[in-house]
Length: 214
Image (tube, rainbow, N blue to C red; front, side, top):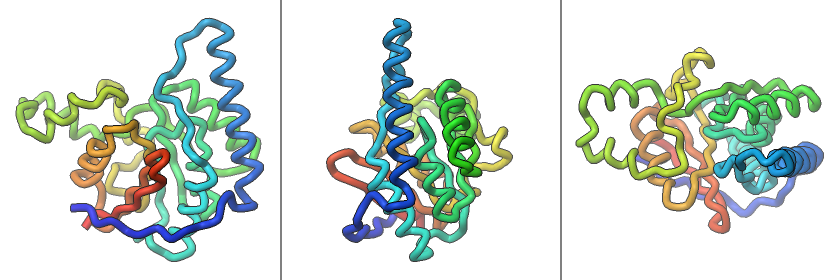
């Protein structure tokens, strides 16, 4: 079960985030344009969130000790900006990204800014999902909901073995689901995250949603 936590009105971007956000957005634009100019397929799921809003909220969570610990994971980390801002806020932050080229972009950006965040290629989904699907649980309503998701790679190998951690090791998770797919992220989090862990999701014009697993 997830319990919603109210997020107060915050001012953003925070001063310490401005340079990183500007450079992250610049590199994201260059990355996309380069793929277009070389006639490579666009990574359709690569859409940046409002980094300023997210960074200020993560800073708020850290300053008010809302998380039960200091581990952070971003599901679908893209250019890695959110993961880096979490590291700046005092979390031990890791990003998971299924696109290897974006992982390399993240590593380069983090190195250039001297931010000790880590990034791993693979799926944010736990290995248990593959095991359950292979054991014939696909008719369970929970597993059926997985097949309704169009913008999550369900076949990529899980990144958690490379992290050396599992989903329930993280105290704060951030994700930017596509419209209509928030339920999927919430279901995964509610089933596999640790009790007391926080899920922060970005919902475009509707802002951010913060929930705790009870």
